[in-house]
Length: 107
Length: 120
Image (cartoon, each protein chain N blue to C red):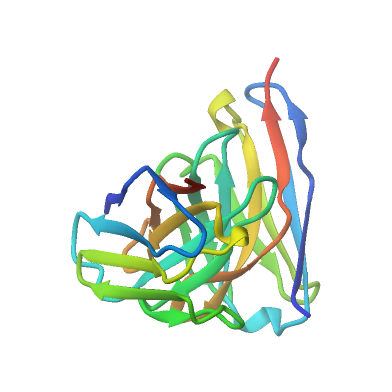
């Protein structure tokens, strides 16, 4: 099973600042990698797939990068609605696996 | 508009069974792989199972293999998850989700979830 390690566990950021979230896969997953956002009481929302392709309707302030084992989600200028938990996932191998999540909170 | 509506959750005793359903609309159900993901209270996301469009490919997490069965009825645009021999650690919100395409295993639409509670 591919283990996904997210860092940091919690990220404190002021509105308008940049947030950088990271994930590391224990094996090469090529670019078969996704990012999700989850707010309290809601289902997750797909942000990025293919490591860098934005989901339909996603604002350009969200960007994904990386390939192989290292991946990054960057939110260029945090807005109030961006404070949430972010999960990454690999879908290159079965079983698909998620990271443990990064909570982005208001500083 | 894509919609996924789960049902069938509830309170069940350890060792019991439940069948979850996910009614899909707004896309061509028969051409897309479908996935179940669960989330225990206060915990992260756990992929449970994926079923390919025609039903020929079934994939399970080790934690549920041999106890859960995924299936679909393309004529009814409905996905199912049969949960048997339930354990306390199966307590979670179960989400039905649609894969982006048959070749992209990210999930772009999710239902609102159905809560399964395993307790005596």
